[in-house]
Structures are given as structure tokens and as C-alpha cells.
Length: 64
Length: 287
Image (cartoon, rainbow over the protein chains, first blue to last red):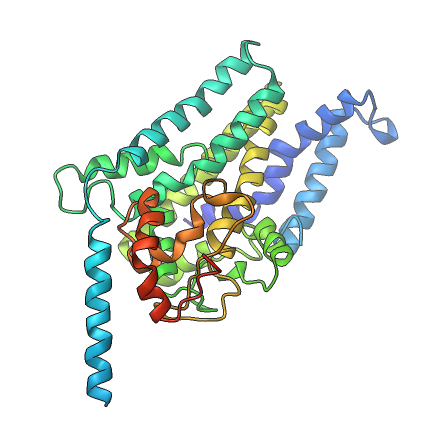
């Protein structure tokens, strides 16, 4: 149960990796954009997804 | 005088119950057919869109409708309206309740435990799981509906923890399984090249419909959520979209008074009970 609790604590970051990263990559590809600093769309998606997830985890909300 | 007033109140309550009883019972066919059709349509969207037989934008609009109407049959099942507890057919009530919310991917057990707490403590700032929806204006209610399920505002998990009953512990386990499985499915779809389908057939309709559901089921009939008590914690209201497009919530006051009246009978029950509700000083919102 403790392990599950820890995993749930990282839920927003896991969501950032699992869902947001490929979604961000798909949006970039649709707009025919590449990631900054030479990153591929999926690499950029992973970075942004993890950052957004970490922020959401800290603030306990994705919005307000 | 006090004794006379008490007898009068008891008589009024007896009249109220006698009227309400006319709308309770029988098999609520609409609440059984509805979830099976709705969930089947939503599940069908996936193969239709994957096979290219339905454009994704159309799938999104249908999914949005599916998600928006998926909660209500489960709500009737939460109150054991389809078959009461103790009936040999009660398993079917539970089946309907679970099938109904497949698109929302929320366990019936979680909804039931938290919803019963809402009924027990409607508008209580600490004990009503829906209290985070409290807002004086519609715009405020919309804002609360958007963030209600965010961990900072969520009260359902806290309620399940606080109760600590076998039912709430079971519901908590179901909630965890649901969350893990939902995110696993979404991630599997997204990483296998189906991110747009995952986004437009499930995740986005789920988020938009949850705002609609929370606004009309929690905010509109209980606003401003400052009063407690049988005749003052819920109100009737006139929606600009009409009763059906407002999830039948114009007459939600009837549900809080008599939770085993099926949703589709609440308008008729409201009309029959209206004179008594007026005597009770209920807020009927001009209805």
C-alpha cells in the first residue's frame, strides 16, 4: 500500500510522461514544428510533460 | 400552541410522504435502457473511428454527449431505485450502476459512498464532499466545476479516508484501480500513435462533461450552499436550457426529499408536492 501511495504521489509526473508527452509531440508534428534546442518533438514533449507534471504535483492542481 | 404546531407539522409531513409515495416503485425502464444504449454507443466510437468509418470530430461530439449523460442512471442505481437492497435482483441494480459510468471510468462504489455523504451533510462546509462547488455566482460555480477534481480541491478521497468504513475502504481500492487502469489505457493509446483518439474520444469529453455535470448537479440546485436542513439545502430553479438539457436538475429538490423517486418522475412529483413545498418555505426558483 505504501508503494502504491508513493506511486500515486508521482501521478501528475507519470501523467506528464504517459499522456502529455506524446500529446505535445503530436501537436508539434501537426503544426510542423520541431522542438527547441534541437530536440525532437517527443523529446520536447517528455521534458515539458515532466516539468508540467512536477509543477502540478507541487501545486496539487493543473489549473488553479 | 407548540403542541398544535408540532401536530400540524407532522400532518404536513404525512401528507408530503403520501404524495411522494405515488412516485416511488415500479421498474424504471428509462433508467435501465439509457445506460446500456449510451455506453454501447461510446464503446462503438472506438472501432468506428479506428476503422475510418466515423470522422474523429464527429466521434468527439458524440463522446461529449455520451460522457455528459453517463452519470445519471448510475445516480439512480446509487439509490437502489432499479432494484432495492434485499431484492434477489439487486445485482442487476449494481450492474446498471457500473455499466452506466464506464465512459467516466469512476467506480459505482466511490460515487455511492460519497453521494450518500452529500445527502447526509448537504452544504456542510466540512462534511459535504460536494462543498468545494460552493460559489455565489454562476461564473464562480463554473470556475469551481473546472477545478473540482484537482487534488487541491478534491473532497472525495478525503471523504473515503475520513469514513474508514468497509464500504469506503473498498471504494478507495476501486478508485485506485480505476485511476491506474485509466492512465494506463490513455498512455498505451497515446504512445501507440492514437493520442488524438485518446484525447478526443475520452480525455477531453471527460473533462468538459465533468464541468457540465458538476455545474448542474452540484452547484445549480444547491447554490449558494450556505443553508442546511431538509427544506433549505436544495432548491428548484429554472434553467435557460430547460430541464432535459440541465440533466433534469430543475427539480433536484424532490430528489433530496425523496431519493428513491426515479429521475424522470421528479417533474411530476414536484408539481404534486409544490403546495407543500410552498408551505415549507422552500426556494422554488419561480418554478
